[in-house]
Length: 112
Length: 117
Image (cartoon, rainbow over all chains, first blue to last red; front, side, top):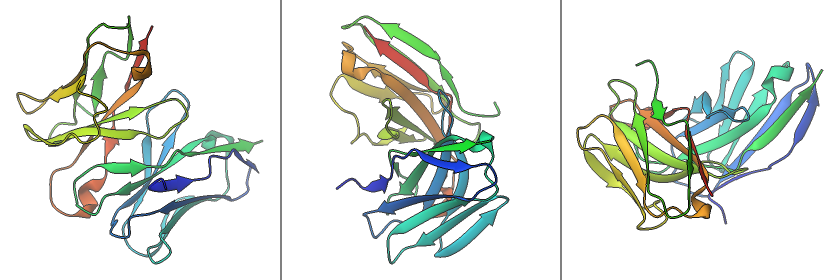
């Protein structure tokens, strides 16, 4: 079982809709969770970090964390064509300051 | 500099050639991390440093891979006797110094795309 699982997609949504991206992880001791956006041919860019159960909002983005279910999600409201990219879920190991474990990424396509 | 810098951005090597990839982390950051990203996959951890110390090299795929950070700033990932399966993007990331999980956030450089022919 891979440590961080994401549906590879593609996830297709129309412009203005809500895009919902999901991620599960296997290590119950994980304490830090991240969403990165990666455009084709570019490096990952941090969108959100979350450390506590519940929701965290930043502009059009909301990250949701449920440690009991080992589940983290990213909602993108009012999706724009410029949001079309691969979204990588990353989980910190249970020791601070060490490597991040990434999922394979979900490809999002927003059509205008 | 403002962000993590890496060089070269692109490298084409003949099979069997040695290559060296350079990472200059964000000023003030203590921990350059190296990841390998194959096409269609997420980044996979290779190794990282804290200051000059290489604290974890468990992700290095073979003894052909090794990393250095001799002067505590620039880090170099070296691949000896390159093979076609080494073709990937090599990403360097750095994080802020400090304690606790809130410093787990890593910022990535532009990467080096290595193609082994």
